[in-house]
Image (tube, rainbow, N blue to C red; front, side, top):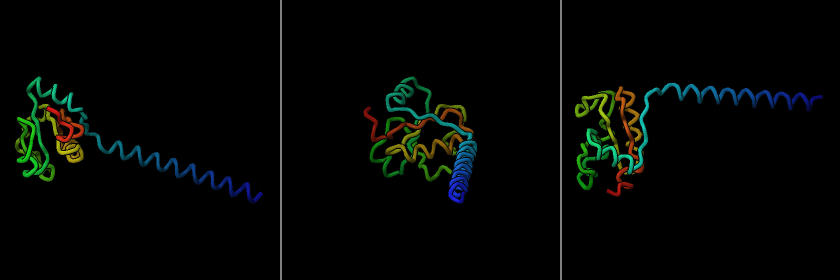
Length: 132
């Protein structure tokens, strides 16, 4: 009898913990409503070739000076805070963001999307994966 009770209590605790973890995950997902889109280098190149995009390099000045994609403007990720970058005045413009490998650009893309920019794209793999 005691063993059955222990098994029952253990199962109930596991079920409660699972429900709690699931509700926390759902709550975390719903707290960030801003969206951006990941693009491969090929998809990004096609958008650039179509024209009318803003290409943003979010690396440091030193990294930008060493190598950058033609036409890119520099807005280091660390400088993107709560205030909209002055170089980006049109919230509906298509903005393609890259860094070295994709980490900083995904952070910057999320920050810009949170600010209300509606067409934000993160170039996966960054300049490390840029063959053009």
